[in-house]
Length: 263
Length: 278
Image 1 (tube, each protein chain N blue to C red):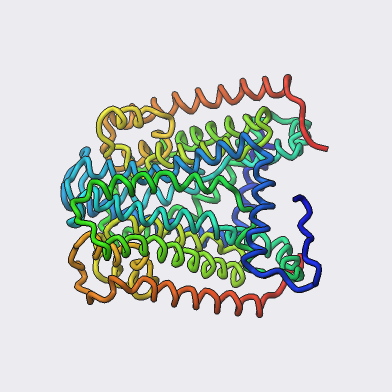
Image 2 (tube, rainbow over the protein chains, first blue to last red):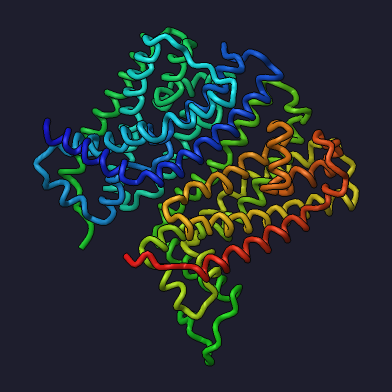
């Protein structure tokens, strides 16, 4: 267990070393938060309530998604495992006397914590200062939000880990990654809140694992999740366990079947 | 024709010719990973559709946004995205500049007897970027068909000019924002705010951003000239900000000014470039 905690700590420290890079990313998150907020405000000005949200909820959502983007790794192509499989460096990782999946989870968790520390608060704070953002004061809500975010993070990692493993067979992670990022951008509700999407498409989108990454934690925070915290918790746990288990099984298959490429 | 060394004298290659040559080389490199290329092209195609879906979702709730109907907004989306997609295909090699500088590879760029800008623009060129063209072209076709407009010669000319000037404006933006990498090598993501940010902002009626920001996007960062100003003329809309009529036709001037600034910035940065030495 200690080795994983050390991996988390060192990975976090590495992330924190690139502070100006994180600042640049935060700037961009904030700009995009503003763009999304203006678009949603234009919509909500014409129709004051959509899917149980008022204008303040929608604007809050725009900035929260931008704040969560970096820790959740929505834009991240994969884990750092993908390129290592392509170059063959993964052979070293397979030698390590640690559990392969947990090792990569620890490294990615360090990165996510760093992202959460440096990149989550500034866009939301900017929104609070200059836009009609409304955050709840109830500490219980925030605790529930934190639990849902943790599950959402595990879902995101599970998906990215699976995509990285696919490199063992495709030999080049970039194709798979770009599909995953494109899917994730939309299905996680980054471009438009999933609760706004009408009809069958909206129903489907609310049940994919991506819905648990940002949309559901934010729903819980805003108090608009149908079925409440209990449903979000069950949903998040279901997908997190399923994806991590799938990742574990695929890791075993890869270990036994695959020839490592590279020099 | 595999060998590229056909110049008998030692005059440096003309910039655009060097650019095309490099593009060909990078395209051949990219086509080595066929499955990956196919998947990334599909992903690019899909990514440009996402904002289109978002616009359709928004219009499933309301009939107009800031006084613009669905075909009108799709016209803005189509022209913006088409101009951006072409500029992205041809000039987004600039995005690799930060990595080049950090790894010291930019030193190699400078010692080659070829225009440094041509090398940087062509860097990592990949045909996958053409995947971004499909959605805007189809959308624009549909929007033009659905718009209740009488297409005069002047309208058509301004519409074509919109895409051409938009393309030039975006190329200038790529180069200008690329210069950020010279000043702060790990601030690359700031550039995204201006390139992808303006791509995202100009596909909606500019008036949704309110007057102060709308004016800033016209006169400070002149992305209003990418599609908003000329499209007000094409779509026959009055300017919600009440700006003078001649600005509808000012896109070429804006493009020329921004190109001049980009060229100046690039030269200044090259002149003051210091290797990271790592």
